[in-house]
Length: 118
Image (cartoon, rainbow, N blue to C red):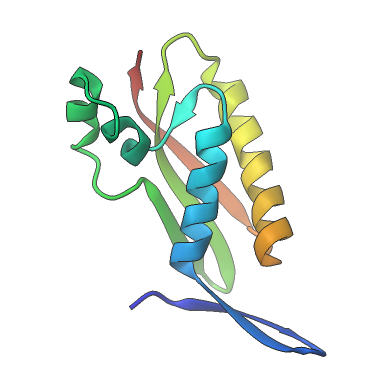
C-alpha cells in the first residue's frame, strides 16, 4: 500500500499518495524537451521501447529519508539533447509543480539517465 503524505492546515488535513506525486513528476517529464520516462518510451513501438522494458515501473520513485522527501528518476535522454541542461530544468520544474499542485516541498530530485534514444 502506498504511503500517504499529510498536509495539515487550519481547514483540516489532506493526504496525498506517493502515486499521485509520482504521476505529477511523470507528467512534468513528459512536458520536458529531451527527457522521457521508461513508460513513455515503452509506449512507442520501436527498438527503443524494447530497451526501456529493462527498467521496471515508470522510472519515478518517491523516497523518504529522515523526514525529507526525495524523488528518484530513471530517465532516457533523446539523442542530441544537452543532458545536464535538460536535467537541471526538469529538477526545477518538478520541485515547482509538486509545490504548486500538492503543497509539498521536495528536498532533492535525483536523476539517473538510463540510456539515450532517438
